[in-house]
Image (cartoon, rainbow, N blue to C red; front, side, top):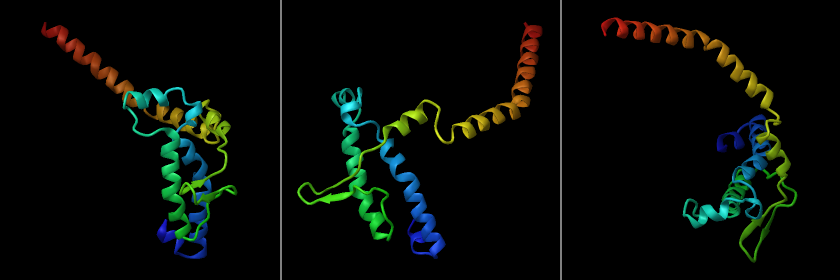
Length: 146
C-alpha cells in the first residue's frame, strides 16, 4: 500500500480504490455485533476467543485508520470520528444485509465463483476417471493374488 500510495496519481487511485472496496467487508469479517452474535459469549466463556467481535473490530479500526491516513488515503466512512474520551475511532453503521446476502449465496461474485467451481469439476473429470480405473485395477490385482 505504501508503494501505491506514494506512487503516481494512478497508483494512488488504485490504493484508494482498494481501501474503498475492502473497508466495509473487512469490518464485517469480524462477525456480527456482540448483541447479535449467539456464539460469541459462549466462545469467550470457553476461552476459545479472548476478545469479542466488537473488541476485535475496534482494535482493527483503531490500528488501521491512522495507517491509512498516514498514507494520505481516506476511509470511506462519513461517520468516522475520533473520540478523545475513549481514545477510539467511532465508525458508521455496518450494513449487515450485504454480508448475509453473500452468506446466502447472493453476493456480487457468487455467479463467478460457482462457474469457476463447475469448470474445475468438469476439467478435473479425467483425473477422477483415471483414479477410478487405477483403483479397479488395484482391486482386481488384489483379488487375483488372494
